[in-house]
Length: 238
Image (cartoon, rainbow, N blue to C red):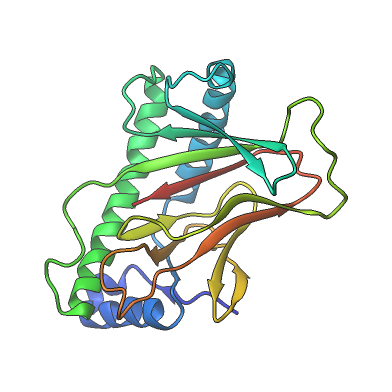
């Protein structure tokens, strides 16, 4: 099943048609992709984020919360450890100024697209104040590392590993580009569908609020298969 695509230039050309396309996609398919995202800047941000997370790996492993947060999660009740390192881009503790500048540029790109989607969706829903347009949202970069603890059980070749359990986001709208590794899946029409946006595109889907009676939220998860040797880095905005 393909992901519906909405062209960002339609916002300027025909706002009503833009609103209709995004509203219809979210109503019927729960998700769509939209272009206008700078893939080159994102790829560079991923590389620099990985370098930064490697630099602070010891801080995460010590359980400290600087420069951001760290969680150790269990996978499938088999005691396999999965480390999630999360960088919140508003964190002022990060001293790498080039990284901050690049992150700001990517976040600005997210914000511009988000505001256009919010305006179109409000027009579709006939509610000018429904989805917040002006407040800057939060950009997060999360890296999921393979299990590295001693005495972890060995997974069989091809055995599934759930990096993120199925859930619905607690935000109005989620925007996410392609990650460094595939794995994102959405529950659509009673089956799990792989969600991999094209380069230069963002996936768009609704969280828990508002308008659940008209536009359904997307239940999603992140699933990969063993051997899971390389980290998966992903960006989320909303």
